[in-house]
Length: 153
Image (cartoon, rainbow, N blue to C red; front, side):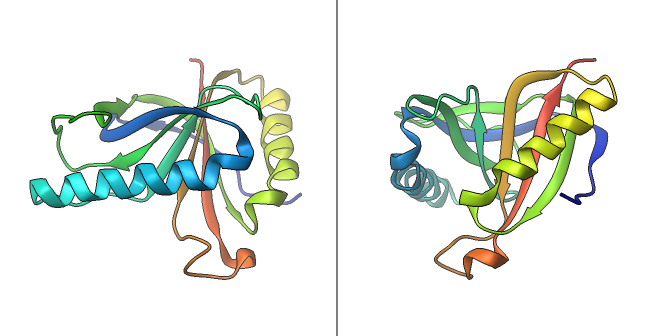
C-alpha cells in the first residue's frame, strides 16, 4: 500500500469529547449520537468545532472498543453531562491520510505499523482518526480519514 507517512511534533489541542465502549458493529451509531450531542452543546455555547470530528481508539478490541469521540475546539471549554473537556496531547505522532471505505482500512494500518517498525518508532497504543467527510455526504471511495498514531519520544 502506497501512503505518504510523516512523523511530526504536534501541539496540544483542546477538545470536547464523550468516552464510550462499544463493539465495532455499533460504532457508527455510537459515533453519530456522540457527535450530535457535542454539536448541540457547542451550539448552546455559541461555539463551533475548530477542526474535523475525531475518534481516539485506546484499544483495538473489536468487541469492546474503548473510544473517545469528539471535536477539537478553539479554546478550552467546560464539559457538561457526558461531554468532557480534554485535549489531544502534545507530542510526536505518525500520521497519514487514507482515502476510501472504513471497512478497508486494515492494510493501511498495517502499512503504517510496518513503517514505524522499520523506523524504530514505538506507538503509545492510542490512535486518532480525523474524519474530513462522512458516508452521508460522499461515496465510500471518497471518504478522507487522517490516521495519527501517538508515538513515544
